[in-house]
Image (cartoon, rainbow, N blue to C red; front, side):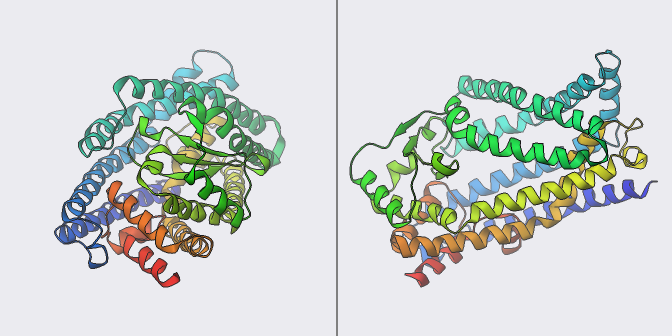
Length: 413
């Protein structure tokens, strides 16, 4: 057996085992603390809300374990099980040319894996989310979103894939460098296009109406030294009762977006504090740092792909007998997440560090007490668990645990 085959199987098996073990720890922590609200939240979170959050988190976690087994099985089937080789051969037999055969193979592979995951997504949306009162997506809207996403994926993805395949075939030994540049350009273009042209395909955005809330938002923007094209309210309630806020875009085209569910639940000072937190990410250059890291990681990835694509053993070890540019691209995209999984704790730690820094920024530019009260409302209304397992949270969670985050906020006020 090829060393890469052994390495891949070992990494895949270890990833499944570790994720299952961490999920088991999380389920045990939820059950252990289900009946008692942490003392720090006893005055603000009811026992019923605490139980609901524990049960909701547990149900999502059990579903994620099924997804884990499905994803691992599909990954094995596509690679060592011969799935990609069969699909590649079937498309190649159509005689539509090497480039478009490659594009068609990659598109159909993506569609097939998405379809296999559809039943679990349907259960998540119309089962778990509906049972806990979060889902507001009807079957017609779900289908419409699915079709829009499919068309959008084809419109954006097919030209990019075709360009990458052309570069892999025709750009010489440094094709991977040109491909990385194309990837970066695509990412930057998408960041510009998303708020202006793509997001409005799925949601309606309206300007925040004049009043105390808009005044509070404008005050915090001034204090934080932030200017944007405006503040929009998005109809997030059309699909879910979960609430959030974010800002998007670059340069003169920056835009703040508030979910309508957030506006309904928080008062003006709390929204102001939440925005101060989000603006903290911008002012502290967190977004630039993350973007630089993602582009740097992509450069390393393309360099590794450039080497792997030239090695016949790379294809044979992963169940593909015929080397090709599109096979290299597919195999690399499928296999890399298995190895990148082991870096997840570092990414989670870095993200949580940024969250603490943004909280401190918000406390100095708005009310830390208001941010704490807003977070408590969001924990309650989104049914977020207050008692995660430390190891599970440390590996997976991009935000600090509720107890640690609120305690840090109280220290900063």
